[in-house]
Image 1 (cartoon, helix red, strand yellow):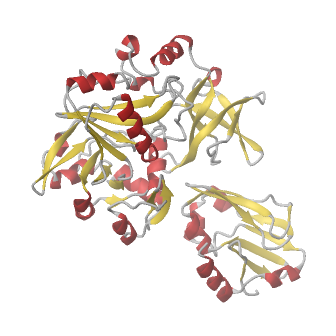
Image 2 (cartoon, helix red, strand yellow; image 1 turned 45 degrees about the horizontal axis):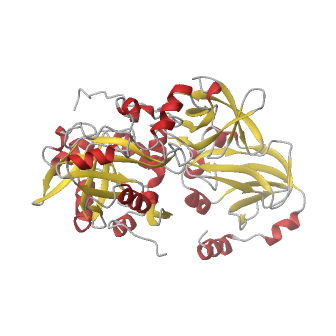
Image 3 (cartoon, chains in turn orange, green; image 1 turned 45 degrees about the vertical axis):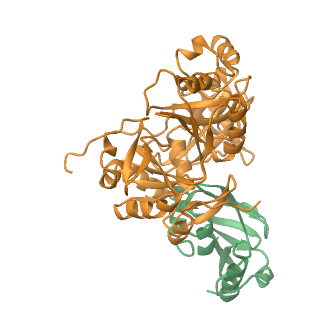
Length: 368
Length: 126
């Protein structure tokens, strides 16, 4: 199969992108300044991310649709306001996560942002679960651009008047070049930010505008270090079909009402896991010193028993040290529990850590 | 001091008497990206030509470092362990990896000179 390119591909090249294949797309892993600089730019100023490989699914319908979607997702969808977004999961009956996604209620239905690797299978599955009752469109014409960082709001407001009034996990239509574009206040970096759904043909000019206003292009490499510091899961690594939201320590993303009332796929399993507990659970892991624990690193207890596995790990440029996440036997999941990581045949000490590793301190500068 | 030679695994080696200083090339650092961790062979340990002699890690991945010649490690560069960013900043001078007492100088014969290495790294693209 031919590798796909986003509408920003030639712009990426112009800014010195190194490309990697990712979920069938040629995506920039980094630009000329490198991952650490890009990471810092996002934490300190504003970064622009091309996330057009992700699926943008639009389902048209009204109250009946909300009801039908609640039979699938463990989220509150009937009773939320128009333009509100929810982080949720497409699960199987065993509560295994087939995809994690963002659902936004809009006037004429729901917009769902899906992981690139899952988008086509999600579409098929959702169409089947909804019994072909609704008009569904997995867009090919739209790019998705994230702008993230403490200056994202100020920069975007210059082009999109009113955008800085959006509340976190809310969206709205905004005017741009006499067209309506949909923007949500959301992201996956642990920073304040926005995700802009814009026509492919407008995407490059829009991004150039953001660059001229002071934001910089950021690749998938820094996206990974940013989200890991923020304790956010990467699909296919930290969450997948063999892990449930309870095991993934994502119970907060399940609607409080709905985990009582049920009626969604995987409810029985979720209910039993909440009542009886789980064997393994996702935790943050902080290796001592500088040693980096990568995905698939085995976690050992003090008495040398295999108690778990790392699902992602890297060096956190803002934390200035190694950071990792993984699944561990529940009895070892308490914060500060000492564990050992086997790396290249040697065991290195680490401890169970609070997530996120990096927490934003929203200090408003006095001397602006 | 003799000329600098290069290996296909993107290490450089500088010989001074029978003491060789070894590091990784500028080209290698460009491929690796920002280096955030390095592990070096212990002083006193023996390494064998083309065998593993350390690890460098970028934010993305870990890569083995190989030694272009055999010998006994007499010194390793602790300053790059403490501050791996030095490797990206000055890979072919200040950020050397280790020094070893060379066992067999004829092992140098198969290595490339600067022009040959430049041609090699351009052609291989890796």
